[in-house]
Image (cartoon, rainbow, N blue to C red; front, side, top):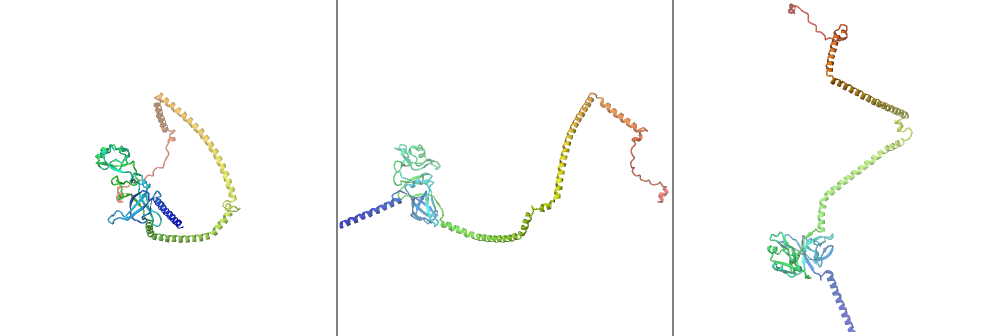
Length: 419
């Protein structure tokens, strides 16, 4: 019995140990304890809403956690809070030197904030897992298996304005070694693309433009940060704006109350006016209802006899218009005939003048004879005027002669002196 109890206790302990080990393993696997983690850091203005252990979000997924938060030294006037975080494998592969940023955004309405990183758009990976090696530039030309070795740095010319070689370029593609040597580059940092290790071997240095060897004491890769204020700060600012706007709102409500009071008074006066106008409206309704009965307003304005006279007048006017139309038609016909006769007369007159012109052109003495005939006719008429028998026919009519001024009577000189 004692032996069976011992075996039972031993089995229970083994099962308990196995369960504990399985729980620890499952927890470690769930939290990524066995995964490689790449460290990063940012600077924030404040630590509000953040704490160590908070998750790091990328594309809506939990990809890491915050591992360290501490204020910067008092003499550092540019940065306030140092925040370091880790990104688990394989999510750090999305973080590149171009396009990857950190955002500190609002998570809820209680002041909680969350750290989010964005996917890179270009540049170079922030961390590499290939072995690094630095070799003289003279040995690069005959390096064995040069297509599997990649450049682990950027090479610029002596002025620092032109990029001669980019990182991640195979050594086999480096054809401008002379230009690299002229730029002052004596050694090249390269990495072996044939081997990939489980831990980071290099971290990109933005200032130097190269991968530095990574160790546990190496500085994490920095990310630019976009920080938004916490909800509590936004609410405080909003409350300040509301307090500043509250007097205007109260003034507006007072004005609105005055407008409503005036509207109520206006509607009351309008109701009284409608009540006063109700008898007039009733009378108008009664009057309009009687318009279609005998003796209505229409018959008052136009009696029956006036209607008959108006119809007779309109009939006479119609007859007169018909007669006038006939007269106009006849006049039109007569005018047409008169115009035709006048045209023929003008044609005859034109023929006559043309014949006369022809006679004159043919006989140049005609004009002289006519002039002599006119002179003789004038002499004949003047002779008739002086003939005693016809003189009375040409006598001029007497007209009222202007009054004569009576002349003074002649007097003797002596009489003039007496006067």
